[in-house]
Length: 464
Image 1: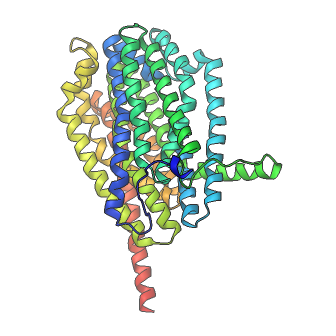
Image 2: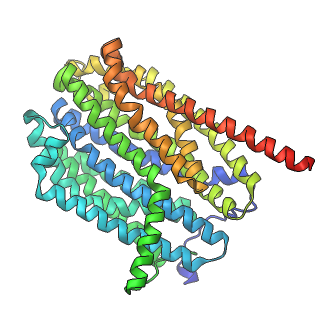
């Protein structure tokens, strides 16, 4: 087997310096995620140029199911990676392999149920997502052809986490780059030469997901180091153990699922509010922000995912100092990335919107005026995701879940409803930044109080 393994990176989670260790994980993760999110943006550009504003709006209507599938994949990926990290720090490779296999198996069952439900009842499903009669034809085409790729999208999401943990972040990056390049090439070919419209965009995405998913499976079959698939027993006891483990995995990763689910809520609520105030053109303008949001998410998530194996491994090894240093590095990186994204969206708004829509489209002016307001969310979103990832990594699932619900649902939905009444159309664009700012205040306040209490407790123990 040795000669068939990849020339993997040398990573020592327990002894390498935190800064270089974080960078060794961060840059391949960031590059891979930027390519992965770029395909979403380019998909939107091709649909906007090849189909028009209604095409973009139709894709945005269906996007929540894609986000939910991604969220399920990230939930099982983060949860299994946290547990596997701790087991590997204890030199219990067998338990880590069992956890990995259980995550893939149970997650695929859940994805199958969702896909078959959408396949059997597409029209009620689209109405639930807020689809109008004008958008129904394009939305149906996109929904039906995106479903096959969701199985492999799940495999890719879970696999990315575990491949990095297994010491091969560059291979994980390669998987994402290959998937993105294939998707971009097929997007162009399906939409323009073949003239398939949004159906072509969905087919392109599905094919890219299938290829990326197969690359993940190939890694664990032929190139693994410590992590590989393990045959699960089918006795009643083994099935009950699988359910117990996967419930714990889901609990740890639930905040990440909620993050994706919250983006679906963001799209769903935003679609309803924009269409009620600005019509289909408003949805098209909002869709551009939704196409850009995966970039904001991917960059922030790259920070959290790079810190996660370091924090989890050292948490399992009881190396608290290394855990705290990793959190500080991840927060600094999150703020820096958030500033860069905000400045880029603010300064490049005209160029960005022009990639999606012609200046003659009514949605164009709506998007260029709203994008600078939307961009404010980038810094606070990055900080929130870094903290949520930290709490997941140290098995504090309840806190990570609460903060995710605050930023993605509890603060977001009222902001979408109330701010437009107070500030008009600007309130539609400020709803997301408002939810992120309020959540950041809550997280930082609670963390500061907790740290002061811990320091006081440590001081008293030292005096004794």
